[in-house]
Image (cartoon, rainbow, N blue to C red):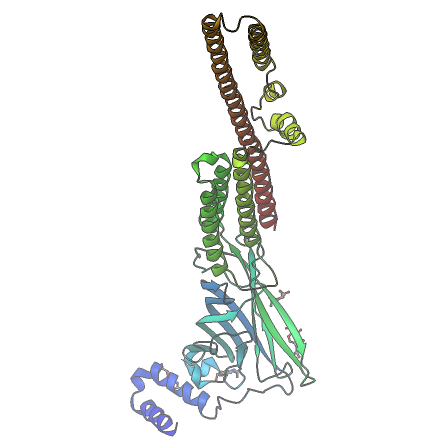
Length: 479
Ligand SMILES: *[C@@H]1O[C@H](CO)[C@@H](O)[C@H](O)[C@H]1NC(C)=O
Ligand SMILES: *[C@@H]1O[C@H](CO)[C@@H](O)[C@H](O)[C@H]1NC(C)=O
Ligand SMILES: *[C@@H]1O[C@H](CO)[C@@H](O)[C@H](O)[C@H]1NC(C)=O
Ligand SMILES: *[C@@H]1O[C@H](CO)[C@@H](O)[C@H](O)[C@H]1NC(C)=O
Protein backbone atom coordinates (compact mmCIF):
# COMPACT_ATOMS: atom_id res chain seq x y z
CA UNK A 1 0.00 0.00 0.00
CA UNK A 2 2.70 2.41 0.99
CA UNK A 3 4.69 1.79 -2.13
CA UNK A 4 1.60 2.48 -4.24
CA UNK A 5 0.99 5.63 -2.28
CA UNK A 6 4.49 6.95 -2.78
CA UNK A 7 4.41 5.91 -6.42
CA UNK A 8 1.15 7.81 -6.84
CA UNK A 9 2.57 10.90 -5.24
CA UNK A 10 5.70 10.70 -7.33
CA UNK A 11 3.79 10.32 -10.56
CA UNK A 12 1.53 13.15 -9.48
CA UNK A 13 4.47 15.37 -9.11
CA UNK A 14 6.49 14.23 -12.11
CA UNK A 15 3.97 13.56 -14.87
CA UNK A 16 1.40 16.26 -14.66
CA UNK A 17 0.64 15.83 -18.39
CA UNK A 18 -1.14 12.50 -17.94
CA UNK A 19 -3.11 13.90 -15.11
CA UNK A 20 -6.32 11.82 -15.71
CA UNK A 21 -4.53 8.64 -14.83
CA UNK A 22 -2.78 10.32 -11.95
CA UNK A 23 -6.08 11.56 -10.62
CA UNK A 24 -7.52 7.98 -10.60
CA UNK A 25 -4.58 6.71 -8.66
CA UNK A 26 -4.96 9.60 -6.33
CA UNK A 27 -8.56 8.72 -5.90
CA UNK A 28 -7.63 5.13 -5.25
CA UNK A 29 -5.13 6.08 -2.66
CA UNK A 30 -7.60 8.50 -1.18
CA UNK A 31 -10.24 5.84 -0.94
CA UNK A 32 -8.29 2.81 0.13
CA UNK A 33 -5.72 4.36 2.39
CA UNK A 34 -7.59 3.45 5.53
CA UNK A 35 -10.04 0.98 4.13
CA UNK A 36 -10.62 -2.47 5.63
CA UNK A 37 -12.29 -4.77 3.19
CA UNK A 38 -13.44 -7.25 5.79
CA UNK A 39 -15.37 -4.89 8.05
CA UNK A 40 -18.98 -4.08 7.44
CA UNK A 41 -19.25 -0.37 6.67
CA UNK A 42 -21.13 1.22 9.54
CA UNK A 43 -21.93 4.88 9.24
CA UNK A 44 -25.29 5.77 10.58
CA UNK A 45 -25.29 4.34 14.05
CA UNK A 46 -27.50 1.27 14.21
CA UNK A 47 -28.92 1.45 10.73
CA UNK A 48 -28.48 -1.78 8.78
CA UNK A 49 -26.87 -1.91 5.38
CA UNK A 50 -29.54 -2.19 2.71
CA UNK A 51 -28.54 -4.80 0.17
CA UNK A 52 -30.80 -5.02 -2.85
CA UNK A 53 -30.39 -8.08 -4.98
CA UNK A 54 -31.72 -9.02 -8.36
CA UNK A 55 -31.38 -11.92 -10.73
CA UNK A 56 -31.41 -12.04 -14.50
CA UNK A 57 -31.86 -15.47 -15.96
CA UNK A 58 -29.65 -16.17 -18.92
CA UNK A 59 -29.98 -19.89 -19.56
CA UNK A 60 -31.42 -23.00 -18.05
CA UNK A 61 -28.65 -25.50 -18.28
CA UNK A 62 -30.53 -28.44 -16.89
CA UNK A 63 -33.31 -29.53 -14.65
CA UNK A 64 -32.29 -32.96 -13.53
CA UNK A 65 -35.49 -34.67 -12.42
CA UNK A 66 -34.02 -37.88 -10.92
CA UNK A 67 -31.51 -35.88 -8.86
CA UNK A 68 -33.86 -32.93 -8.34
CA UNK A 69 -31.24 -30.37 -9.30
CA UNK A 70 -31.68 -27.17 -11.22
CA UNK A 71 -28.68 -25.70 -12.96
CA UNK A 72 -28.95 -22.25 -14.42
CA UNK A 73 -26.73 -19.59 -15.82
CA UNK A 74 -27.73 -16.36 -14.16
CA UNK A 75 -26.55 -12.84 -13.67
CA UNK A 76 -26.70 -11.69 -10.10
CA UNK A 77 -27.12 -8.01 -9.33
CA UNK A 78 -26.26 -6.77 -5.88
CA UNK A 79 -26.21 -3.19 -4.76
CA UNK A 80 -25.61 -1.49 -1.48
CA UNK A 81 -24.14 1.66 -0.02
CA UNK A 82 -20.63 1.79 1.37
CA UNK A 83 -20.17 5.06 3.24
CA UNK A 84 -16.42 4.52 3.46
CA UNK A 85 -16.06 4.73 -0.29
CA UNK A 86 -17.42 8.19 -1.01
CA UNK A 87 -15.68 11.05 -2.66
CA UNK A 88 -16.33 14.50 -4.00
CA UNK A 89 -16.30 14.07 -7.78
CA UNK A 90 -15.41 17.72 -8.41
CA UNK A 91 -12.25 17.26 -6.36
CA UNK A 92 -11.17 14.31 -8.49
CA UNK A 93 -11.53 15.60 -12.01
CA UNK A 94 -15.26 14.81 -11.95
CA UNK A 95 -14.57 11.11 -11.75
CA UNK A 96 -17.80 9.80 -10.34
CA UNK A 97 -17.36 6.13 -11.02
CA UNK A 98 -14.64 3.68 -10.25
CA UNK A 99 -14.34 0.04 -11.20
CA UNK A 100 -12.22 -2.05 -8.91
CA UNK A 101 -11.64 -5.75 -8.34
CA UNK A 102 -14.19 -7.12 -5.95
CA UNK A 103 -11.53 -8.44 -3.60
CA UNK A 104 -10.55 -4.84 -2.75
CA UNK A 105 -13.82 -3.98 -1.05
CA UNK A 106 -16.23 -5.38 1.46
CA UNK A 107 -19.08 -7.33 -0.10
CA UNK A 108 -22.10 -8.82 1.65
CA UNK A 109 -21.87 -12.53 2.29
CA UNK A 110 -24.95 -13.41 0.29
CA UNK A 111 -25.42 -17.16 0.22
CA UNK A 112 -27.66 -19.41 -1.74
CA UNK A 113 -29.46 -21.45 0.90
CA UNK A 114 -30.32 -24.60 -1.07
CA UNK A 115 -27.04 -24.72 -2.84
CA UNK A 116 -25.92 -27.93 -4.45
CA UNK A 117 -22.67 -26.51 -5.76
CA UNK A 118 -19.80 -25.16 -3.67
CA UNK A 119 -20.55 -21.47 -3.14
CA UNK A 120 -22.00 -18.78 -5.32
CA UNK A 121 -19.65 -19.43 -8.17
CA UNK A 122 -17.49 -16.53 -9.37
CA UNK A 123 -18.46 -14.24 -6.54
CA UNK A 124 -14.82 -13.18 -6.03
CA UNK A 125 -13.75 -13.13 -9.67
CA UNK A 126 -15.24 -9.98 -11.13
CA UNK A 127 -15.09 -6.22 -10.72
CA UNK A 128 -17.64 -3.99 -9.17
CA UNK A 129 -18.48 -0.40 -9.78
CA UNK A 130 -18.30 2.27 -7.08
CA UNK A 131 -20.21 5.49 -7.44
CA UNK A 132 -18.93 8.70 -5.92
CA UNK A 133 -21.83 8.66 -3.47
CA UNK A 134 -20.66 5.31 -2.15
CA UNK A 135 -23.20 3.25 -4.09
CA UNK A 136 -21.84 -0.16 -4.89
CA UNK A 137 -23.12 -2.23 -7.80
CA UNK A 138 -21.83 -5.71 -8.26
CA UNK A 139 -23.19 -7.54 -11.27
CA UNK A 140 -21.62 -10.83 -12.09
CA UNK A 141 -22.43 -13.98 -14.02
CA UNK A 142 -22.65 -17.24 -12.21
CA UNK A 143 -23.74 -20.82 -12.59
CA UNK A 144 -26.18 -21.77 -9.88
CA UNK A 145 -26.83 -25.37 -8.99
CA UNK A 146 -29.69 -25.54 -6.60
CA UNK A 147 -31.88 -28.19 -5.12
CA UNK A 148 -35.32 -28.05 -6.62
CA UNK A 149 -38.21 -30.16 -5.51
CA UNK A 150 -39.56 -31.59 -8.74
CA UNK A 151 -43.18 -32.64 -8.72
CA UNK A 152 -43.77 -34.87 -11.71
CA UNK A 153 -47.37 -35.79 -11.02
CA UNK A 154 -48.47 -34.18 -14.25
CA UNK A 155 -45.47 -35.15 -16.32
CA UNK A 156 -45.08 -34.26 -19.22
CA UNK A 157 -47.60 -31.45 -18.79
CA UNK A 158 -46.02 -30.30 -15.58
CA UNK A 159 -45.02 -26.90 -14.28
CA UNK A 160 -42.10 -26.75 -11.92
CA UNK A 161 -41.35 -24.01 -9.46
CA UNK A 162 -37.76 -23.82 -8.32
CA UNK A 163 -36.94 -21.52 -5.45
CA UNK A 164 -33.59 -19.83 -5.11
CA UNK A 165 -33.27 -18.32 -1.68
CA UNK A 166 -30.56 -15.79 -1.02
CA UNK A 167 -29.65 -14.34 2.31
CA UNK A 168 -26.74 -13.22 4.38
CA UNK A 169 -25.24 -16.04 6.37
CA UNK A 170 -23.39 -14.16 9.09
CA UNK A 171 -25.24 -10.87 9.46
CA UNK A 172 -28.73 -10.70 10.83
CA UNK A 173 -31.45 -8.38 9.69
CA UNK A 174 -30.43 -5.55 11.99
CA UNK A 175 -26.96 -5.48 10.45
CA UNK A 176 -27.70 -6.32 6.87
CA UNK A 177 -31.16 -5.84 5.43
CA UNK A 178 -31.52 -7.77 2.21
CA UNK A 179 -34.34 -6.77 -0.11
CA UNK A 180 -35.32 -7.22 -3.72
CA UNK A 181 -34.44 -4.52 -6.20
CA UNK A 182 -37.37 -5.23 -8.49
CA UNK A 183 -40.80 -6.81 -8.47
CA UNK A 184 -39.74 -9.79 -10.58
CA UNK A 185 -36.68 -11.42 -12.04
CA UNK A 186 -35.22 -10.18 -15.28
CA UNK A 187 -35.99 -12.29 -18.33
CA UNK A 188 -35.04 -9.84 -21.07
CA UNK A 189 -31.80 -11.59 -21.93
CA UNK A 190 -33.07 -15.13 -21.53
CA UNK A 191 -31.88 -17.61 -24.14
CA UNK A 192 -34.73 -19.99 -24.83
CA UNK A 193 -34.44 -23.55 -23.69
CA UNK A 194 -35.42 -26.60 -25.73
CA UNK A 195 -37.23 -28.30 -22.90
CA UNK A 196 -38.48 -25.50 -20.69
CA UNK A 197 -40.42 -22.31 -21.01
CA UNK A 198 -39.84 -19.82 -18.26
CA UNK A 199 -43.18 -18.36 -17.34
CA UNK A 200 -42.06 -15.96 -14.65
CA UNK A 201 -39.58 -15.29 -11.90
CA UNK A 202 -41.48 -14.14 -8.85
CA UNK A 203 -39.78 -12.64 -5.87
CA UNK A 204 -40.80 -13.13 -2.28
CA UNK A 205 -39.05 -11.64 0.72
CA UNK A 206 -39.21 -13.51 4.00
CA UNK A 207 -38.13 -12.52 7.46
CA UNK A 208 -37.36 -15.57 9.53
CA UNK A 209 -36.59 -15.88 13.21
CA UNK A 210 -34.39 -18.88 13.87
CA UNK A 211 -34.19 -20.82 17.10
CA UNK A 212 -30.68 -19.64 17.81
CA UNK A 213 -31.12 -15.95 18.00
CA UNK A 214 -33.74 -13.26 18.61
CA UNK A 215 -32.72 -11.25 15.55
CA UNK A 216 -34.64 -11.44 12.29
CA UNK A 217 -33.01 -13.08 9.30
CA UNK A 218 -34.43 -11.74 6.06
CA UNK A 219 -34.04 -13.55 2.76
CA UNK A 220 -35.07 -13.00 -0.80
CA UNK A 221 -36.49 -15.93 -2.73
CA UNK A 222 -36.63 -16.07 -6.48
CA UNK A 223 -39.32 -18.45 -7.69
CA UNK A 224 -38.56 -19.59 -11.19
CA UNK A 225 -41.70 -20.99 -12.78
CA UNK A 226 -40.85 -23.47 -15.50
CA UNK A 227 -43.29 -24.90 -18.00
CA UNK A 228 -42.29 -28.12 -19.68
CA UNK A 229 -42.62 -28.33 -23.44
CA UNK A 230 -44.45 -31.64 -23.73
CA UNK A 231 -44.05 -32.39 -27.44
CA UNK A 232 -40.90 -34.47 -27.09
CA UNK A 233 -42.43 -36.73 -24.48
CA UNK A 234 -45.70 -36.93 -26.35
CA UNK A 235 -43.92 -38.10 -29.48
CA UNK A 236 -41.44 -40.36 -27.78
CA UNK A 237 -43.38 -41.84 -24.89
CA UNK A 238 -47.13 -41.33 -25.01
CA UNK A 239 -47.86 -42.04 -28.65
CA UNK A 240 -45.63 -45.12 -28.87
CA UNK A 241 -47.29 -46.41 -25.74
CA UNK A 242 -50.71 -45.81 -27.25
CA UNK A 243 -49.68 -47.51 -30.47
CA UNK A 244 -48.30 -50.49 -28.64
CA UNK A 245 -51.44 -50.76 -26.55
CA UNK A 246 -53.55 -50.66 -29.66
CA UNK A 247 -51.40 -53.40 -31.15
CA UNK A 248 -52.54 -55.45 -28.18
CA UNK A 249 -56.06 -55.12 -29.65
CA UNK A 250 -54.88 -57.02 -32.70
CA UNK A 251 -54.27 -59.99 -30.45
CA UNK A 252 -58.03 -60.34 -30.10
CA UNK A 253 -58.56 -60.22 -33.85
CA UNK A 254 -55.90 -62.82 -34.60
CA UNK A 255 -57.43 -66.24 -35.35
CA UNK A 256 -56.54 -68.79 -32.68
CA UNK A 257 -55.31 -71.31 -35.24
CA UNK A 258 -52.42 -69.02 -36.11
CA UNK A 259 -50.90 -69.93 -32.73
CA UNK A 260 -49.53 -66.40 -32.34
CA UNK A 261 -52.14 -64.89 -30.09
CA UNK A 262 -50.31 -65.30 -26.82
CA UNK A 263 -46.87 -64.49 -28.18
CA UNK A 264 -48.20 -61.24 -29.63
CA UNK A 265 -49.54 -60.20 -26.23
CA UNK A 266 -46.31 -61.16 -24.54
CA UNK A 267 -44.28 -59.11 -27.03
CA UNK A 268 -46.52 -56.12 -26.41
CA UNK A 269 -46.10 -56.57 -22.67
CA UNK A 270 -42.32 -56.67 -22.99
CA UNK A 271 -42.15 -53.56 -25.12
CA UNK A 272 -44.36 -51.73 -22.64
CA UNK A 273 -41.99 -52.79 -19.88
CA UNK A 274 -39.12 -51.24 -21.85
CA UNK A 275 -41.06 -47.98 -22.13
CA UNK A 276 -41.82 -48.02 -18.43
CA UNK A 277 -38.08 -48.36 -17.79
CA UNK A 278 -37.38 -45.31 -19.94
CA UNK A 279 -40.04 -43.33 -18.10
CA UNK A 280 -38.82 -44.30 -14.66
CA UNK A 281 -35.30 -43.30 -15.66
CA UNK A 282 -36.55 -39.82 -16.52
CA UNK A 283 -38.45 -39.33 -13.32
CA UNK A 284 -37.30 -38.89 -9.74
CA UNK A 285 -37.53 -41.99 -7.57
CA UNK A 286 -40.24 -40.41 -5.47
CA UNK A 287 -42.95 -42.25 -3.64
CA UNK A 288 -44.79 -39.08 -2.71
CA UNK A 289 -46.35 -38.32 -6.02
CA UNK A 290 -46.59 -40.98 -8.65
CA UNK A 291 -46.80 -39.44 -12.11
CA UNK A 292 -49.93 -40.00 -14.12
CA UNK A 293 -47.83 -41.18 -17.02
CA UNK A 294 -46.52 -43.96 -14.80
CA UNK A 295 -50.09 -44.81 -13.91
CA UNK A 296 -50.87 -44.82 -17.59
CA UNK A 297 -48.06 -47.20 -18.37
CA UNK A 298 -49.02 -49.42 -15.48
CA UNK A 299 -52.63 -49.40 -16.69
CA UNK A 300 -51.48 -50.27 -20.18
CA UNK A 301 -49.33 -53.09 -18.84
CA UNK A 302 -52.16 -54.31 -16.67
CA UNK A 303 -54.54 -54.22 -19.61
CA UNK A 304 -52.14 -56.11 -21.81
CA UNK A 305 -51.55 -58.69 -19.08
CA UNK A 306 -55.28 -59.11 -18.70
CA UNK A 307 -55.64 -59.38 -22.44
CA UNK A 308 -53.01 -62.11 -22.33
CA UNK A 309 -55.16 -63.92 -19.80
CA UNK A 310 -58.23 -63.34 -21.93
CA UNK A 311 -56.42 -64.74 -24.93
CA UNK A 312 -55.61 -67.87 -23.01
CA UNK A 313 -59.27 -68.16 -22.04
CA UNK A 314 -60.28 -67.75 -25.66
CA UNK A 315 -57.76 -70.34 -26.79
CA UNK A 316 -59.04 -72.68 -24.14
CA UNK A 317 -62.60 -72.26 -25.39
CA UNK A 318 -61.48 -72.60 -28.97
CA UNK A 319 -59.96 -76.02 -28.44
CA UNK A 320 -62.43 -77.27 -25.87
CA UNK A 321 -64.68 -78.85 -28.50
CA UNK A 322 -61.96 -81.34 -29.39
CA UNK A 323 -62.70 -83.32 -26.27
CA UNK A 324 -66.31 -83.81 -27.25
CA UNK A 325 -67.66 -81.74 -24.45
CA UNK A 326 -70.86 -79.94 -25.24
CA UNK A 327 -71.62 -76.32 -24.51
CA UNK A 328 -74.04 -76.00 -21.62
CA UNK A 329 -77.45 -74.78 -22.74
CA UNK A 330 -77.39 -71.61 -20.66
CA UNK A 331 -73.95 -70.65 -21.93
CA UNK A 332 -75.15 -71.23 -25.48
CA UNK A 333 -78.17 -69.09 -24.85
CA UNK A 334 -76.23 -66.24 -23.25
CA UNK A 335 -73.35 -66.15 -25.67
CA UNK A 336 -75.03 -67.02 -28.96
CA UNK A 337 -78.50 -65.58 -28.66
CA UNK A 338 -77.82 -62.50 -26.49
CA UNK A 339 -74.17 -61.46 -26.54
CA UNK A 340 -73.39 -62.83 -29.98
CA UNK A 341 -76.02 -60.60 -31.53
CA UNK A 342 -74.81 -57.71 -29.41
CA UNK A 343 -71.24 -57.97 -30.62
CA UNK A 344 -72.29 -58.89 -34.16
CA UNK A 345 -70.69 -62.28 -34.49
CA UNK A 346 -72.65 -64.52 -36.89
CA UNK A 347 -74.11 -67.24 -34.72
CA UNK A 348 -76.06 -70.27 -36.05
CA UNK A 349 -79.68 -69.22 -36.52
CA UNK A 350 -81.18 -72.73 -36.53
CA UNK A 351 -78.98 -73.84 -33.73
CA UNK A 352 -81.66 -75.99 -32.08
CA UNK A 353 -82.56 -77.89 -35.25
CA UNK A 354 -79.01 -78.68 -36.20
CA UNK A 355 -77.99 -79.78 -32.76
CA UNK A 356 -80.69 -82.38 -32.17
CA UNK A 357 -80.13 -85.29 -34.60
CA UNK A 358 -82.40 -85.09 -37.64
CA UNK A 359 -85.12 -87.64 -37.07
CA UNK A 360 -85.87 -88.81 -40.64
CA UNK A 361 -82.96 -90.83 -41.87
CA UNK A 362 -82.24 -93.00 -38.84
CA UNK A 363 -85.92 -93.87 -38.49
CA UNK A 364 -86.14 -95.06 -42.07
CA UNK A 365 -83.11 -97.17 -41.59
CA UNK A 366 -84.47 -98.54 -38.37
CA UNK A 367 -87.80 -99.37 -40.04
CA UNK A 368 -86.00 -101.07 -42.86
CA UNK A 369 -83.86 -102.98 -40.47
CA UNK A 370 -86.96 -104.06 -38.63
CA UNK A 371 -88.54 -105.22 -41.89
CA UNK A 372 -85.50 -107.21 -42.74
CA UNK A 373 -85.47 -108.77 -39.37
CA UNK A 374 -89.08 -109.74 -39.72
CA UNK A 375 -88.59 -111.23 -43.13
CA UNK A 376 -85.56 -113.24 -42.13
CA UNK A 377 -87.37 -114.43 -39.06
CA UNK A 378 -90.20 -115.61 -41.34
CA UNK A 379 -87.83 -117.53 -43.51
CA UNK A 380 -86.30 -119.16 -40.50
CA UNK A 381 -89.73 -120.23 -39.32
CA UNK A 382 -90.56 -121.74 -42.68
CA UNK A 383 -87.26 -123.59 -42.65
CA UNK A 384 -87.88 -125.01 -39.22
CA UNK A 385 -91.42 -126.09 -40.08
CA UNK A 386 -90.14 -127.82 -43.11
CA UNK A 387 -87.49 -129.55 -41.13
CA UNK A 388 -90.07 -130.79 -38.63
CA UNK A 389 -92.36 -132.29 -41.30
CA UNK A 390 -89.43 -133.83 -43.05
CA UNK A 391 -88.27 -135.44 -39.88
CA UNK A 392 -91.58 -137.25 -39.39
CA UNK A 393 -92.53 -138.45 -42.88
CA UNK A 394 -90.18 -138.68 -45.70
CA UNK A 395 -86.84 -138.13 -44.29
CA UNK A 396 -85.22 -141.00 -46.16
CA UNK A 397 -86.94 -140.63 -49.51
CA UNK A 398 -86.42 -137.07 -50.16
CA UNK A 399 -83.01 -136.99 -48.73
CA UNK A 400 -81.42 -135.56 -51.81
CA UNK A 401 -84.18 -133.18 -52.50
CA UNK A 402 -84.24 -132.15 -48.92
CA UNK A 403 -80.54 -131.75 -48.88
CA UNK A 404 -80.67 -129.57 -51.97
CA UNK A 405 -83.61 -127.73 -50.49
CA UNK A 406 -81.88 -127.20 -47.16
CA UNK A 407 -78.78 -126.13 -49.06
CA UNK A 408 -80.71 -123.46 -50.78
CA UNK A 409 -82.33 -122.51 -47.51
CA UNK A 410 -78.93 -122.42 -45.88
CA UNK A 411 -77.62 -120.31 -48.71
CA UNK A 412 -80.49 -117.95 -48.23
CA UNK A 413 -79.94 -117.70 -44.48
CA UNK A 414 -76.25 -117.14 -45.06
CA UNK A 415 -77.11 -114.47 -47.54
CA UNK A 416 -79.42 -112.89 -45.03
CA UNK A 417 -76.73 -113.16 -42.43
CA UNK A 418 -74.29 -111.37 -44.68
CA UNK A 419 -76.88 -108.80 -45.53
CA UNK A 420 -77.54 -108.22 -41.89
CA UNK A 421 -73.87 -107.88 -41.22
CA UNK A 422 -73.61 -105.35 -44.00
CA UNK A 423 -76.57 -103.55 -42.66
CA UNK A 424 -74.93 -103.52 -39.29
CA UNK A 425 -71.73 -102.08 -40.63
CA UNK A 426 -73.68 -99.65 -42.76
CA UNK A 427 -75.55 -98.38 -39.77
CA UNK A 428 -72.25 -98.28 -37.89
CA UNK A 429 -70.77 -96.13 -40.62
CA UNK A 430 -73.87 -94.05 -40.63
CA UNK A 431 -73.69 -93.64 -36.87
CA UNK A 432 -70.04 -92.82 -37.09
CA UNK A 433 -70.71 -90.25 -39.75
CA UNK A 434 -73.47 -88.81 -37.64
CA UNK A 435 -71.23 -88.77 -34.58
CA UNK A 436 -68.45 -87.24 -36.57
CA UNK A 437 -70.55 -84.49 -37.98
CA UNK A 438 -71.95 -83.87 -34.56
CA UNK A 439 -68.43 -83.72 -33.19
CA UNK A 440 -67.43 -81.33 -35.90
CA UNK A 441 -70.44 -79.24 -35.19
CA UNK A 442 -69.53 -79.22 -31.53
CA UNK A 443 -65.97 -78.18 -32.31
CA UNK A 444 -67.25 -75.42 -34.53
CA UNK A 445 -69.59 -74.29 -31.83
CA UNK A 446 -66.83 -74.07 -29.26
CA UNK A 447 -64.74 -72.17 -31.74
CA UNK A 448 -67.64 -69.85 -32.32
CA UNK A 449 -67.98 -69.39 -28.57
CA UNK A 450 -64.30 -68.52 -28.48
CA UNK A 451 -64.88 -66.01 -31.26
CA UNK A 452 -67.78 -64.40 -29.42
CA UNK A 453 -65.79 -64.18 -26.20
CA UNK A 454 -62.83 -62.80 -28.14
CA UNK A 455 -65.02 -60.12 -29.63
CA UNK A 456 -66.48 -59.23 -26.25
CA UNK A 457 -62.99 -58.95 -24.79
CA UNK A 458 -61.89 -56.83 -27.73
CA UNK A 459 -64.71 -54.37 -27.16
CA UNK A 460 -64.00 -54.31 -23.43
CA UNK A 461 -60.31 -53.78 -24.05
CA UNK A 462 -60.87 -50.93 -26.48
CA UNK A 463 -63.38 -49.32 -24.17
CA UNK A 464 -61.21 -49.57 -21.08
CA UNK A 465 -58.00 -48.46 -22.75
CA UNK A 466 -59.84 -45.57 -24.38
CA UNK A 467 -61.34 -44.49 -21.08
CA UNK A 468 -57.99 -44.79 -19.29
CA UNK A 469 -56.18 -42.83 -21.96
CA UNK A 470 -58.76 -40.06 -22.01
CA UNK A 471 -58.93 -39.90 -18.22
CA UNK A 472 -55.20 -39.67 -17.81
CA UNK A 473 -54.82 -37.15 -20.60
CA UNK A 474 -57.52 -34.96 -19.13
CA UNK A 475 -56.05 -35.34 -15.65
CA UNK A 476 -52.52 -34.44 -16.70
CA UNK A 477 -53.29 -31.66 -19.13
CA UNK A 478 -55.99 -30.06 -16.99
CA UNK A 479 -53.35 -29.01 -14.46
C1 LIG B 1 -6.55 16.22 -11.86
O1 LIG B 1 -6.16 16.51 -13.19
C2 LIG B 1 -6.38 17.84 -13.62
C3 LIG B 1 -5.97 17.96 -15.05
O2 LIG B 1 -6.62 17.06 -15.86
C4 LIG B 1 -5.63 18.82 -12.76
O3 LIG B 1 -5.92 20.14 -13.12
C5 LIG B 1 -5.98 18.59 -11.30
O4 LIG B 1 -5.18 19.42 -10.49
C6 LIG B 1 -5.77 17.15 -10.91
N1 LIG B 1 -6.22 16.95 -9.55
C7 LIG B 1 -5.49 16.32 -8.64
C8 LIG B 1 -6.07 16.23 -7.28
O5 LIG B 1 -4.40 15.87 -8.91
C1 LIG C 1 -17.03 19.18 -3.46
O1 LIG C 1 -15.89 19.99 -3.79
C2 LIG C 1 -16.25 21.28 -4.23
C3 LIG C 1 -14.98 22.00 -4.64
O2 LIG C 1 -13.89 21.65 -3.90
C4 LIG C 1 -17.00 22.01 -3.13
O3 LIG C 1 -17.40 23.24 -3.59
C5 LIG C 1 -18.22 21.19 -2.72
O4 LIG C 1 -18.88 21.78 -1.64
C6 LIG C 1 -17.85 19.77 -2.36
N1 LIG C 1 -19.02 19.00 -2.14
C7 LIG C 1 -19.24 18.26 -1.05
C8 LIG C 1 -20.49 17.55 -0.99
O5 LIG C 1 -18.42 18.23 -0.17
C1 LIG D 1 -35.55 -3.89 5.64
O1 LIG D 1 -36.10 -3.55 4.40
C2 LIG D 1 -37.49 -3.65 4.32
C3 LIG D 1 -37.92 -3.36 2.92
O2 LIG D 1 -37.11 -2.44 2.32
C4 LIG D 1 -38.12 -2.68 5.33
O3 LIG D 1 -39.51 -2.78 5.29
C5 LIG D 1 -37.60 -2.99 6.70
O4 LIG D 1 -38.08 -2.07 7.64
C6 LIG D 1 -36.11 -3.01 6.73
N1 LIG D 1 -35.65 -3.50 8.00
C7 LIG D 1 -34.81 -2.79 8.78
C8 LIG D 1 -34.45 -3.43 10.07
O5 LIG D 1 -34.40 -1.70 8.44
C1 LIG E 1 -40.05 -6.76 -3.70
O1 LIG E 1 -40.96 -7.81 -3.89
C2 LIG E 1 -42.23 -7.56 -3.37
C3 LIG E 1 -43.03 -8.79 -3.55
O2 LIG E 1 -42.85 -9.30 -4.82
C4 LIG E 1 -42.86 -6.37 -4.06
O3 LIG E 1 -44.11 -6.09 -3.53
C5 LIG E 1 -41.96 -5.17 -3.89
O4 LIG E 1 -42.46 -4.06 -4.62
C6 LIG E 1 -40.57 -5.51 -4.37
N1 LIG E 1 -39.68 -4.41 -4.10
C7 LIG E 1 -39.18 -3.64 -5.06
C8 LIG E 1 -38.25 -2.59 -4.63
O5 LIG E 1 -39.49 -3.77 -6.22
